[in-house]
Amino acid sequence: MMTSHIPLLIPATFLLAALLIPLAALLWRRLSWLLAVAATGLCFFYAVKGLAHVTTAGRLHYHLAGWQPPFGIEFVLDPLSAFFSVFVTGVALLALIHAGRVVAHEVSGVDMGFYALAMLLLAGLSGMVVTGDLFNLYVFLEISALASYSLIARGDPRAPLSAFRYLTLGTTGAAFYLLGLAFVYMSVGSLNLADVSHLLPDVGDTRPVLLGLSLMVLGIGLKMALFPLHAWLADAYTHASSAATALIAPIGTKVAAYVLLRLMFFLVDPQYLRDQTPLPAIVGCLGAAGMLWGSIMAMCQKELKRMLAYSSVAQVGYIALGIGLASPLGFIGATLHALNHACMKACLFLVTGNFRVRLGHSTLPRLVDDLRRTMPWSAAAFTTAAISMVGLPPLAGFFSKWYLVLGSIQQSNWVFVAVLVASSLLNAVYFFRVLERLYLTPLAPPDDTDVAAAAATREAPASMLAPTLVLAGALLVLGIFNAWIVSTFINPMIPSRLGW
Image 1 (cartoon, rainbow, N blue to C red):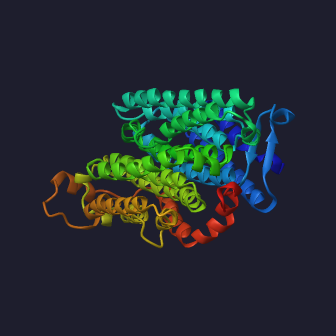
Image 2 (image 1 turned 180 degrees about the vertical axis):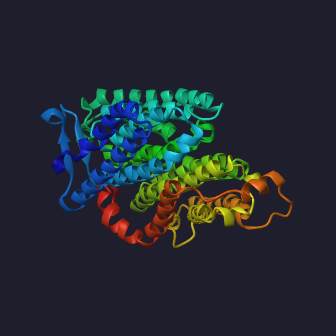
Image 3 (image 1 turned 60 degrees about the horizontal axis):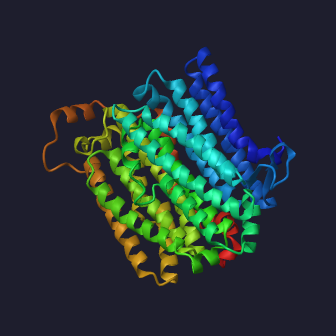
């Protein structure tokens, strides 16, 4: 395999798997799951190999059909895209391994469709990460969106309505992005990201560019579920199958955050953006508001999946706050939290899937303390991820929040510091409420049927438990080695114009 082909091989492998899965399912139904896992594992290998090459030898560029940019379509692995490719494909691999039993339990009979759509989703998300063309990014955005709508619709009876609501808002977001892209193209006459970045300083009248950039940020903010553009997220995550939620929730909004990083720090001069436009301040303030709103709403939920959905709104706020700081420390905090949250939220949703397979539900009032004995490893994994979400050392969540606090202090933004602290305390409230159900004897006696169900419960099967424990262990590893991750992978991706 030629290393130079890696930027193309990642999305192309997913697309090929999406085409082969229906044929494979005709031979053996289980083969669709095996092929999806194998394709994702291969893409994870490509991503790791690409990151190793980028770290040691520099960027990888692939020009489709040999056409040189800005006329041809370019795929690029640089420090930022290579980093995101690794954790997107890695988390997706663990989620799909876990999905084997969950899909058979929750959406039995449509296994082939689920895995084919999962491959299309990952093709779109990975394509958004590696493309160097702004219009090609829109194409991959639509591929991932259409797949995610279909995956969400395959859930409980309310899932189709949730998917339709997501489709309506998602299409609006994509339209905003495309309209903004038209303004940028009208101003510079190019769609290649690097070429546009080079030409923008020569544009005399920047108002169309700023309008276009604002519309693109608005569209991506909706895809990212940035407050108050998050209305689609809670219902979509709650009513979709556990397998679909565990795949979409950890990585979908993170890829949108990647695009926002690209637009605000690589497409235009971040110094100009910070000094001459309100965009960073707006994104940061919306992120801070989302942190509080999402945390408060999570405290009010009785369904574990819905609680985690609103928690995602808050966690997206952390990333947006880091982007809004428009500083090196903010960039580090946002990027590191994207990685950490992908692992934390994947772990939490996998545990929710374990509960649903063994208990038949994930309703908080019906969880009983007997689960600490009948499902000890799932309970321990949830506890690890929950403590990391709260932000206690040495787990991963603490360190990304620490960089965000340092970035806020550096700019004397004490409101952001207060919001970061308050949000972490609110996280503790709603997560410790779950831990109380798992580990402490309730004051009121639980329903006899729930006690009987818990007593008859066994730990999740190995195919579900293994990826859950890998993610829980990864949170400790990411926390311990956070300084190495920042110095080796994140520092080189910070644009020099950001003042690092």
